[in-house]
Length: 318
Image (cartoon, rainbow, N blue to C red; front, side, top):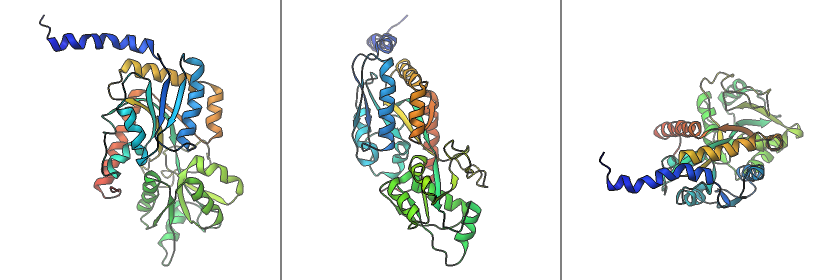
């Protein structure tokens, strides 16, 4: 059998893959959160790091490296050694950035290795109780009337797109208003200053006790456990409406499959803890654990959605 010099050089690294997975972790694990401290992804990552601690021989350290819609921090992971000790927790705009930012220093799919999907972030279309519509049909009827004045708030590219997709599918025009945070958006909904908004369950939950918030629809094909009485967009006639945020754990390109599986198993152990699940529920975070292959498939599906939206002019580069 002919063995080339290249094959001989590659052989040790191939043989080392199972050993690398077995020896992980050999040093502290960094999870870089490429967003500001105190946000939903940061809170989830810190809760996960605590839940991982009992089952690992090394600590899990959270580092915030915010900037450029998550690009700054994620680039550090893309450039890191693929040894399982540097990971990142990103939201679904990680894929969307490919179509909304002018310059990307890495490819959102090719330059990372999916490890686990952590959470699904169902988006809600919300309004104030003083508004004259109770559901999507009522919203369409009201928005279609001559002289109606409606606007909808969003906090980033994903919520803006979903809010405008509601309007497009209802065949009405509802201009978007940009907010810095879901908290600010919900404050204006409660006060009656903003007619509509699209934001996460985590942003809406703390304000429901005021009695001044009405949820019109959720963006996923199944109802969210946090608002089980709220009908989905699909249930209200918008066939195929399936848009949501998510949080995924990624490693650098080249992370061996055996090691990604090993890390996923550790994450699954954390998700099996009742205290961890209760913590997520208290934060309005919906667990959505997927293995590396399923996470990659979900990211590829997102890429197809944003590619089509970009081609149709529904999202543009900033």
